[in-house]
Image 1 (cartoon, rainbow, N blue to C red):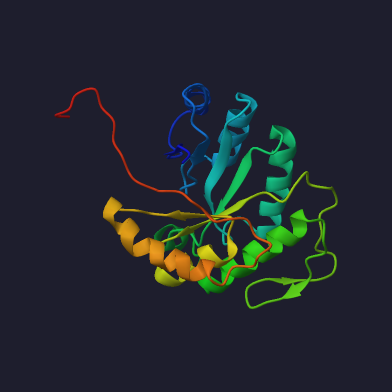
Image 2: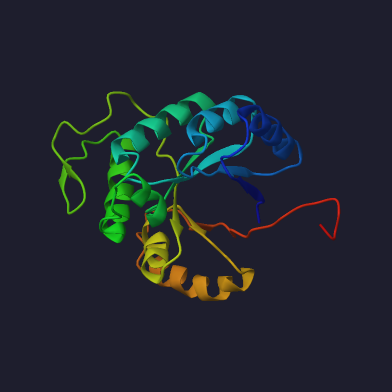
Amino acid sequence: MKFSLRLNNDLPVQDYVRLAQAAEAAGFHQLWISNDLFLRSNLPIITAALQATSRLHVGAGILNPYTIHPAEMAMLAGTLDELSSNRFLLGVAAGAEEFLTWVGLEQDRPLTAMRETIQAVRRLLRGERASLAGRFLHWNEQAYLRFQPPRVTPIYLGAMGPRMLQLAGELADGALPLLFPPEHYFAVRPLLDAGVAQRAASLPDLDVAACIWVSLAEDREA
């Protein structure tokens, strides 16, 4: 078992630097930073946290393919792994439908979008040409990275619905299910396992994060 933290993207950047250093000193393995729309961008925060630590893995939790193109996701992942000696984690999901409506975007074919996004990003990070004619992504033979990423960055899929949870089990390196309330785990696990049953043997064991909301205070009654 490993321990991780997830923080929202609403604090000053220097606060995340201090929190990342404290998390590393306390023995945490991962730190995830949200990317809710119209708050601080999580990518500069992640960069600062990676530069301020030496062992902590820091993840984007999450990026969606409607506001950040999957090609840019691969560029970011390869660059941040290069910066951090392979400590970046790429969290992807279909995003919050309400946030997308704020900027006139539709959550078009979310299940297809996530399947094609994960497949395309992996191909780019492997150094392949990612030409494809999908239902969501339409790339030609010029779709390839012009630099060699240090590895294929682990991709975690944020999932809530049954089909997205099954897709996480089938295709992602890790799953980020929102366990609210915590007892929801017992409904989530069978869906992940159903996806794992369809999983390619070449993929590593699925890493499942228990995404549980907590609130800390010195005053128990607060």
